Image (tube, rainbow, N blue to C red; front, side, top):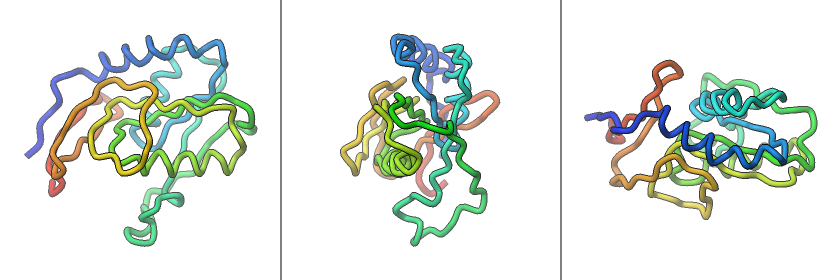
Length: 167
C-alpha cells in the first residue's frame, strides 16, 4: 500500500530556499545526489539564482552495499566543478534515513578535493539512522515504521510517497 504525504514538495522547497539564503555570502557549490537530490538541487539552484553550475553525484561506486547488490544498471557520471578544494559545499538529497548515502557522497566529494565545509540539506528526514549523520537543513521530519519507505517521485509534479518495503 502506498500513500502520498500531505505536504506539497513546493512548500518544503520554499522553506529550504528561505533557510539557505543566508549561505549565499559564502558562494556555495550546490551538489545534488542522483536522482531525487539532483532534481531538488536544480530547483534550489535556480531559486537562489546562483551563477556557477549545479553539480551532481552518482554514488553507485561508493555504496557500502555494492558487493551485495551489484552495480546499478543506470550509473551516470558525476559532474562537479573542476576544483572544490576550500569551497563550501551544499549537498542536497531527497530523503535522509540511514545516513549511508550521505557517507558515500562525502567519500566521493573528498576524492575530488578537500572542501572548506559540507552542509547537508534534505527534503525529508526520517527515523532509522545507522550512521551519525544529520541534516543541517530539513524540509520535514517524519517517523515511519521500519517496514515503511518514503520516495520522491518526479521530476515533474514531484511528490513524496510512503509505501511498505515490499512495494
